[in-house]
Structure formats: structure tokens, C-alpha cells
Image (cartoon, rainbow, N blue to C red; front, side):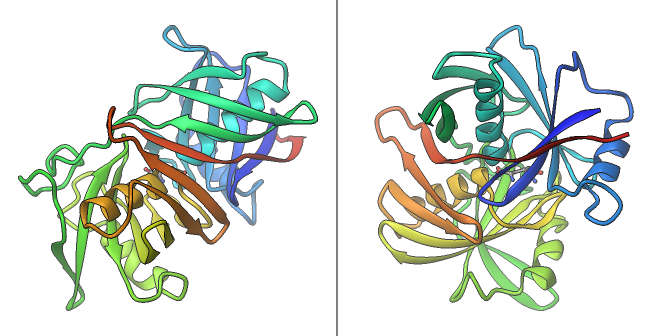
Length: 277
Ligand SMILES: N[C@@H](CCC[C@H](N)C(=O)O)C(=O)O
């Protein structure tokens, strides 16, 4: 198999293109290829497929073999891949996702290659049962969740995939490994959840660290950055446009007031191409 390794702010992916559909053994393949010791190593396996509704379709399989509905960093990598490899010459295109519909994407190039991508990530889902959580409220803001005797307050947001945002005193120093997996699998979250730990520094800048459903601690999460901005607006902590600073770098997130849509701008990068059996 020919593959391309790419990343969005260090959230890294194995990109496979040229297939017509996902193989039957896609979960096993993702687990094997994403393994950082016995495989190529990545947070997820991404397929670029033909679409009947959009220019391209993207499917994202987490490193544990579970399929996610959407991935903000991967969609930027897909956009760069298709342009840089001559599969399209459009600087404005559409990409179909499993759980967030068809998403319009704008590309910025430097020396003929894509370096910055803005994605229309659509409208956030705030109804608790739809995120999904087990909480029948709309929106779910500052709801308590207790793990091992420690209580956190979370705000629930779906960007096609589920997120809970928790405010902490020190996001960069937060103990993700202890609390992340327990929150990810808490019974309040029937399809598990991506967990963002955020520290608001000003009305236009937030530090965030993430424990991802199906992938663990990653250096960045695009949908998580969108969820963090939405949560921060709902909690009265930031304006509708802010920089979300992740371990791998910054994303600019803009929640448009007139159409309720979220625009994410950030880089995408090629690491290398290769072949694997
Ligand atoms: N890293 C991603 C999200 C990938 C999917 C996630 N782990 C899930 O299971 O929902 C992003 O950049 O959005």
C-alpha cells in the first residue's frame, strides 16, 4: 500500500487514497498501522474516497480501530493532499464527512502548495441527548461529573463528534493520563467522548489540552478546538473569535453570529510518503 503521513499541528495521520470504499478489516488495519512501535505510527487512519455529494469524501478511523464522525485536523490534511497531488485544482472545495455532512473548505497556498486551510465546520449541536450525553438539557453547561471522588464541571458540544469541555487552572500541566480515560468512558457519555481541558487567558485566547476518544492524548484536536470556543462563548468567557492554543500550535476559531457556523483556520503539513505491507 502506498501511504502519505501528514499532520495538523502534530495530530498525525496515515492517509490512504485511491480506494473506492473502506476495507472490511479497516479496524484491524488502523490498529496495526497506527501502532507507534510495530507500525507507521499515527493518531488515525484516513481514507480519501469518491463522493456523490461533494468533491471528496473523508473517513477517519482512530488508532484504536473505532471510526469517528469527523476530524478537524484530518480534513485540513485531506484538503492539502488532494490539491498538492493534483486531484483537484480548486482552491474552494467540499469534503463529505460521516457525521458532520458536507463541509466547504478554502485553501491558501505558498509556492504552489497548500499551507493554510479554513474549514466551515458547520453548526455546533448543543442538545445534551444529541451530543450525545444522558442529560436531557439544551445546552448542557457546567454539568457535574464525578470520577474517583473528584468532581469536574463540563459543557457538552458536538461538532459531529462528541466533546466535553472542562475548565482547569493549568491546561498545559494537567494530568491527562489520569483523568482523560476515565472521563472518556464515563456512563454520562453513551458513545464515549473527547475531553478538552481548557484555561481561558483572555477573551481571545485559550490554552487547551485534549484526551481524544479512541486515540488518547494528542497534540491537537480541531473539533476539540471548535468545541472549546463554543463552550467558552456559552460560559461567557471569550468572544466569538479566539485563538485556541494546543500542544502542537494554534488554531483560529470563529463562531459566526449570523449563520451559527464555525470556521476553523490552521495549517496542514506533509511528513513523508512511503509503502507498507
Ligand atoms: N483529532 C480530531 C478528532 C478525531 C476523532 C476523535 N478522536 C473522535 O473519536 O471523535 C480532530 O482534529 O478533530
